Each structure stands twice: as structure tokens, then as C-alpha cells.
Length: 370
Image 1: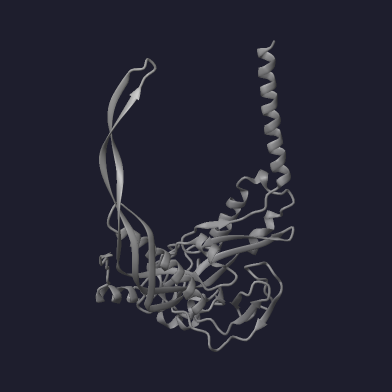
Image 2: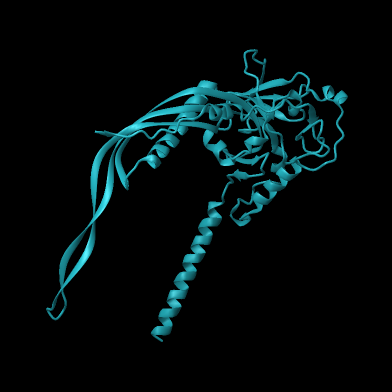
């Protein structure tokens, strides 16, 4: 079996850069009073909303949040930290009241990075109103949309960010195209025979194996049981170069969720994603015109992880015992969600369209036979 090395090894600088991409200078400041975006000492204006700011080092300490209360939802498993004066809490993820207060666990990993809210509460509510108003005729008439916007909450959600080196051994059958000239004849309706030539593509197959190395980074895994990975993908991407070193004052005035998906579980999800990327990268590096039977065996090493808090507005509500959710990326403003539909109205519309078609066809037939 022939063997080829398709190696893309990272240099030491590449490894250093991949690891220190998040190594930013620790900030000193406080959240913007208008939108909550982190503002550093040298910032004269809020980077998110443009509000003029005057920040003095003396007031930094005042922005540090005091002890927080911690709640766990017995329905979806999310764990959220709130202001100490909050006496009750309705789960932002599943709209459940089955929430109990809990003691903060001392062995929790501290977040390393945070991205501040760049979308204000008012902007997030307006996005919901615009979204829920779309195709309003298909919405149930008894859905009380006027009160739903008040359920929307801004939450710092935990995400695990991983970087790692993938080292793969692969094998495949490589195909190379070549063409031969083929002569053929055709006979027309009068019985005349004509000779033609055409190019026919053939494929020559040969086995090949080799190694492939690639460094992967930047994939975010949801650390929240309340926001499964499938739903977290819907509000991506986040602008990760905006990450700042975590400081407690960033959370002042906002809910923050404790991670409920442990690092090892998140690592498995990330490695599955990176393995798919590795398979695609290996396939792209293969020589020849085509290939088949590609097998890739990958080992991951040099694994680094960071726990990040990212801003998301969550609005969860129930309609006829079914949960619906509307999400806004608190950094970019991207919004996604699901809303109930009135199937009676949809079926009525379909029936009306069918009847209209029947009447049109009947009218055409009457004219033709008139």
C-alpha cells in the first residue's frame, strides 16, 4: 500500500497563539448603567450603546456584586445565581415554578472569561414584539402576547471553550480519472448508419494511507442543561475576540447561571465536533480526483479549556402545556424562537385555497363547454 504524509503540524507559535488567544489583560471598571456592557477605566464611551462614561478607580469596588442567592430548577436542572434580595424565582429556561434555593458549591470552577451585553433590555423586548407579530394571522387568538415580553430575562450563560491538537492516521482508496476515446454508431429513421466518437471517463483506483495533524479551537459547548447544545447552536456565533477576563462586577444587575454540564461531558461533545472537522480536513487533503472507503483514526492531545459566560436573553412561556422559547444573542442581537400556531386557521386557509382552485377549474370547464 502506498503511503503519503499529509501533515499540517502546528508550529510552536501556532500553539502559543491558540492557547493565548484568550489571554487578554484583566479589566478594571464597571458595567454601563444603560446597557450593562463592561466598561474599562480608559473608555470614555460605552462600546455597546455609546453612552458617555466617566469611570474612576475609586468607584470600581462599589460595582462588585454582593453575595448571591442560588436556585436550582427541579424541572430542567438549570442553576442560576440571582440578587440576594430575590425571594422567589421562576425558571427562565422552562417557565417552571419548581425551583428551590440551594447553597453554592465551593468546588465550582470560576469563569475565566466573559462577554458583556451589547443589546439592551428594551432592544431585546422590541425584537420579541417584532418576531411574535410576524404572520400574526396564524397565531392562536387566545395567546396573550402583551404580557409575554415581561417574562424575558437577561442571563449570563456558561459555555465551555476548548482547544486541542488532533493527530490522525488515515487510509483510503484514491481514484484518478483518465479518458479514452470510444467509437459508436447510430441509425436514423431511414436506416442510415453514422459513426461517432466520444470521450469516456474511467477511474483508476489505488490504496493510500498517511498521517494528518491539525490544531482546533473556538468551538463553544453549552454548560447549561436548561439550554441544550442543539438550541445553543441556533444563537451562535458569538464574537469571541471581545472576550474579557472575568470580574464579578460584570454580573451586576444580571442573572448568571452556574454550569450544570461538567467539563468532561462538554469535552466529549466538543471532540465529536472536532472529529467531524478532522474527517473533512483529511478528505480535503487527499490527492487524486475522488476517493472511497476513507477511515480516520484520531487522537486528541494538548487539551485546553476555558469557562466563559456569554450574554443571552431568554423568554420561556407555556401555551396549552407546551413550552415555547425565544432567544436573543445578547452580544450580536441574533434572535431565534418557536411560537404556537393555530392549526384551525391554517386548515381553514388551506380549505379556502382548495375551494378557490375548484371554483376556478369549474369555471374554466363551464366556459369550454358553454
